Length: 332
Image (cartoon, rainbow, N blue to C red; front, side):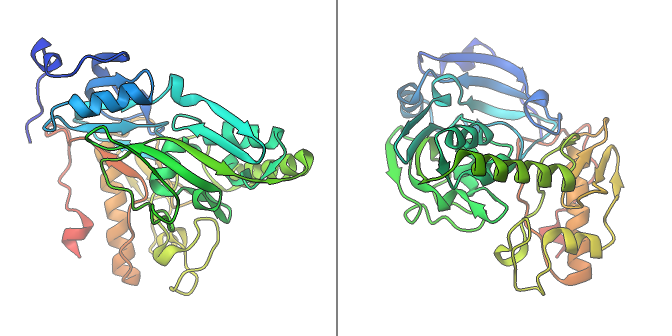
């Protein structure tokens, strides 16, 4: 696959006028927790939701659009991301608390939302202390941890579709289930309203500390990683809930298949938690993805279970630095 050359003014001339900012040929390797990946053709930082809607309404549909959040659950391929990469910050980082209701922009960090709710004495958001992402990303995948998920506290979410039309929908309309949101692929979440119950801030703080410590004790938090790599089969909770395979979770299937500590290039399956991939320092995105596919192949051969990626993979392979990669879907 050929990689497009750096863009010229001709490309930018096709993009609509915005109040936000366009930046060309932006290195994205520092934008994901794996610290790998190629450049974005154009990075767009909209001024606010109206600016985003106007951009989507006028941007030619043949130009790809990709939304980039905190990058904690993301693998950016070495060839980079074509088209426009949209990053929501600034106005999308606002939080407002009114009684038991909390409205947050899509760029708000989950941990910050948990802290604001703690200070407001609202119970139900403690699990977000264990999710290293943003509200927008959490909505897109119904992120969860330690027995709770976004669906449990969500009242409604707002999104802009590919034509610039604004939508508001609740968790049932969004068909939210385990690590799943049924919103159309072209929806970009911009804000959400959550609801909690009144509680004691000290008890909430203690619970958040438990979540923080549990994550520190069981996950490779101080490494170049991307969070849980694969979903648990049949909707098992990533931190201990049941599934229909003898209560085996993804990490247990990976461990049983002998993949703990498995290495490919600069990528390694974590020794501490084998549902995490680690960039040991010199990994390429291709190393990480190929290792993930090897894990999937081995698990399928051992248990008959085809693990599904939880980490989002975007962009193109670099034809000059990509090992032969046979996807597990094709090998099964």
